[in-house]
Image (cartoon, rainbow over all chains, first blue to last red; front, side, top):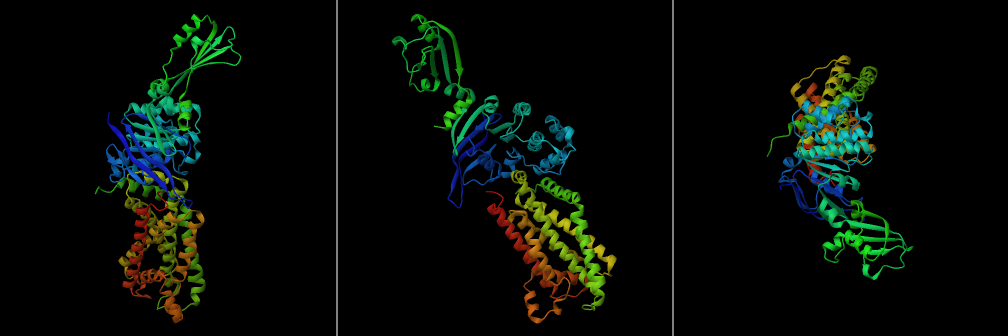
Length: 315
Length: 256
């Protein structure tokens, strides 16, 4: 698979009166053509700085970035022509009309006027009816869509969405997810940063986690879920046990204080690292039957990406 | 080197000119009105009691200076607001992330600001023709001084718009520097009318050279030689270009 974006040994140090602050530390990242990549990280982790450097808003302290093979500094025109950026803040003009603002963006990126294409973009974002409205009259959700329309106005091949659904209602969020999927289907590569784990889980092909200026993990979403996912089996017993029978004893098995509940935790990461050979759920239930321990119900729970994320950044 | 991104220059230029049309009262009507008031007060009311200056009726004598006064203040105000406002609202991100060179950004913003000033200058000149008799001895030189001054002070305005970190600073330069220098730069008098000591001090005021050269293009009379006026104007132009180049090279106030 070919690369759309390559970031090598990228560092950023902000000089300040109270000393320097290293916002990014030796970042290496590769984004494949046509994928949706979600960059997760807590506030201040460096997500917006990273996007800002790639898009030309912030100067890097060191390192190299190429967009579809074009260096983003030496060959900035070719690199930037490929990029559309939807910023985190709702930064729009106030007095322009929707249509003229989107047409302005297209011209800024060097493309000749194309009212038919602008119409298509505005229609896809349900903004066509508002084309002659001044931006100041739009709702927050519409302004967010306008920023996306501006970013798409010059037919970019890579789209950066910096927290696109922050403060957006559920319906609009779903609409945006559908739009992003459609863009991906059209061959556009998407890098989105988000606080919403649900968003990454729903949309991303791959996930990167950034914390304190360092990329601490990049993984296929499915692999990540599988590798780091914990499953917990809870068995509700018919009768209380005083202790776990010796035949069943295992680090992963716990008995509740009242003796009525057995909890078994399956940790895929520990098994992958060979630290523990784990039972399957079926094995455990068989062993309970053999030991003559009756149960009335079982419940399984799989850890969400959010739990995985929290455990990663708190390491 | 790739060709200029003319679509981008056109987009920014149109955007800025559209802003002028939206704010027509502030951009055009207000300076024309205030200049007309100067003609009424200095030209008609007081001017009638002032003898001719270098053989020119006082009302006609002040026309080049009044055009310069508007040209300088409006060039600085237009250009500084044009670049400061997107910085203030944050929409500058789009220009900085676009495949646009620094030269193209300057051509577009400064070109639009200078165009507005030139349109304004032409309107004021026409307005002046309604109040006082006018003649222009050297029309091409007049146009050259007009264009050079509009571009130079639009560049200065661009620098102010990048430097300013609030609306107060934005108004500081036009109000506290440009207006006093223009008033003291021979807009309303010939510097021969000053005592010798103040004549020397005045020569340190760059606006003297602009007004003098511009007045020479009208009436063939000047406080300093037209060549010196042109030289000083060009010197100031290149100084502004140098500072703008430094701003983009270092990313000063634009790119952290």
